[in-house]
Length: 139
Image (cartoon, rainbow, N blue to C red; front, side, top):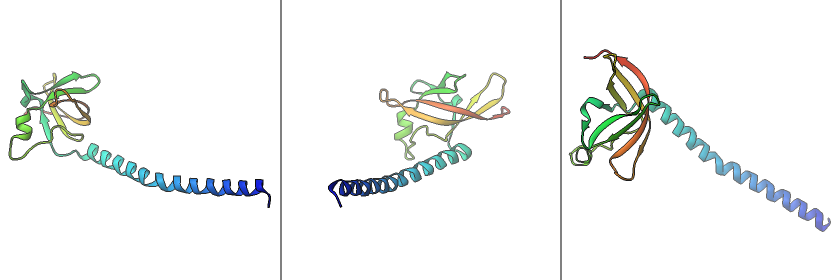
């Protein structure tokens, strides 16, 4: 066997090892991605059970309002004492939480958070995206 032939065989073995490593390296990541996607879909379908009512969050430092209704973007500031000062601390608004809002038609709109991003400054501020899930008669 020549020197060139042994290099070719060595390179082929190296390529096979790299390919096997890449397959084994990416398999857990893909499984984790599938699991995260399934958890997200489950949240979107069933929600977290937590509901935020815009009518109850209208004061300074404790407010949720529409940033852009057409794009279904919400901005809010949640009272830090309500979040962390009580015996049952809240973690704030999360993906899968519901938002209820009075609509101009007189009905109550129910929306679900699909994205929530907390700002660094001020730390109680968040921006969220919602999707409409139901319209209910006002009580």
